[in-house]
Image (cartoon, rainbow, N blue to C red; front, top):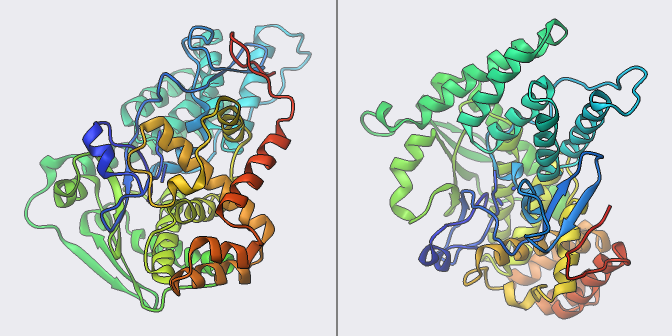
Length: 453
């Protein structure tokens, strides 16, 4: 269930069964999982920002936070929800020789910190830092490059193009390699625009069938026309997903799994009638995804995520408990992209929820996330992620396989958890909360907000 939230209240009641773009994966109660598009953070979110000294601040007081502050709940989820991201690649930043704490030295330190945050999946923190760099040095080519990368990863092609052109304008000869890469990315954005333009669609959708031993893959012919090795790369992603899921939970589908990939405009034309909000994918017995023109690491992650949902449904006969279904899929996806299961900022946001009484009991999100507002659905989603990470830390693959088998045999989640871990749902909830509290034992709140350096 890849990515974001519906924006109207009626849609939210129907949606929510990724997720980070700001994408959050949420389960639906319509018999399929879906991938919804970005939504702005709620005003009640904890805010966070990075100052010019590179210190991170958190606050639950909107008046206390600067205008450029971000909401940490969404930070690690944004790029993960995008099928257009292609990983953290870009020019290296080295220390200024003889740096003495002046503006040039400060810019270099902030840039190095932002790149480190990107590599750890701390995308909101990195974005805040890079924007701060541009306030200090508006022509910084590195800041423009990485902001273009983030914008492209979120499917924001206008912003990505703008930053890439600013990079080309500012980059000197020492960045010739990256100037060439910027031109390639600008051309790729042009490909994406064509696939997203409904005016180019004529006639019926043409799908090219590529059946294999484990998958029944169908690819929009327009994708194949743009990228000659498209199908081969996607099949490699899917086979890798099968291997990873088997290693993690010990099971694989008994029959070949159907997967259909579309150009953006074709996906909208074929499936917009299903939803009252925008999506980039769903699972209804087959995986359907609106794909980038050129397969990316993030598309790989989306396919890992959706494949995990398919295996979960085959093993258990359904999608519940949603927190377990979503958490497993997210864990598999993040691992596929070399990312931590959760970031420190994400866990700090959950610690803030514990302090302010906003933690959601697992039993409340077993049947789905429907009925939750946008910010609360983000909380539920992230709690699912850290809960499944806790389960994995306390079990082996055989125990996780038996847990799913017991659900498929009609056992309750409490019975299945107790056999695997000696805990029921409530006990697991308590254990996860204690672990988060132990990571942030000195957390303090005040009327002025939460500040942590």
